[in-house]
Length: 409
Ligand SMILES: *Cc1c(COP(=O)(O)O)cnc(C)c1O
Image 1 (spheres, protein in one colour):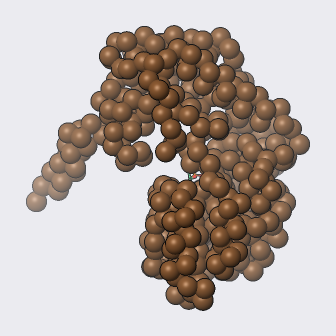
Image 2 (cartoon, rainbow, N blue to C red):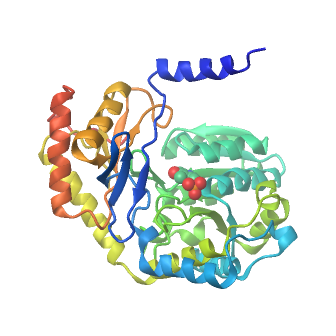
């Protein structure tokens, strides 16, 4: 039996659909964010990264790096096992307290990634509610979809950010059936934001629980970096908030924050929590340092918004098809998988600019794009050079300029 034929056939299908992915071999340079070394086929080259989800550059912040090194030197690297077997190390306890405080909740629970927190968190919560109906936004992240699927509960999908549709489904389910509304606060491919206050209104009116993924907002929105829910003054109205330590906080790990008994139940029942080794102490200390820093420093948040607004303005003025939104994400419409990949390759090879192409299945076919994520450290010179490079690439590939800016939907 030639088993390898199955795998080469599977890869062939991706090549045929122009969906085969190639990763660039990059090495970031601490202290020089967003500059990095690209280990290209012809040797190392300097490049500027324009698509990192280390949105605020916290992964290189001296306090964050310092905390990681200090803890590694003091207590070592790994956690030494699952929390059930090896106990809970102190930096993890401190981090959970920091997160509960960030979100104004009684407790928080750490997972090895944001992905796992959604997958095992949603599955466990919904399983513990008899006959739970999950109402899931159409554009929810794969980790939430997997959590919903693994719960085994009935699921209905409401049209993206469509409150009228959500209300219809809530009414149809009836007041007595348990319902869990699951959505994100900031959708990272279009950069649009959920109407959280109105979703909370509906949840309260129709007796539903709320679960909100704030992965692309924590650290970046709200006076203390508590996310869109903090900014909008609705954090206390959301039952379960989920976030990551891997994006704006520059580390690794995911979490949920909620009432004490909810967190205790997930801690006690979630397989994706119980049967895997806890996050390493140095990571926990680094994340705590990042969260603490962003609770009191608004410089990063303000400069981040300022840079994003400038990139949008400069690219728009150049006639490039920026997809409009009110957040820090700058999607640039391409609408063709092949050209999207070629644009990304040209930017890297000829201009030393790294922007990963975003193709199906991450976004719908026909809406392929370059997703640009400016950080506080992308200065005016870098922005001007980005616009010039994009214009050259747009011309080379015969892509349209001066299109009417597309709506975020
Ligand atoms: C990245 C992402 C996650 C997963 O977080 P990780 O910490 O990277 O595993 C969850 N939800 C959304 C919306 C994301 O974009």
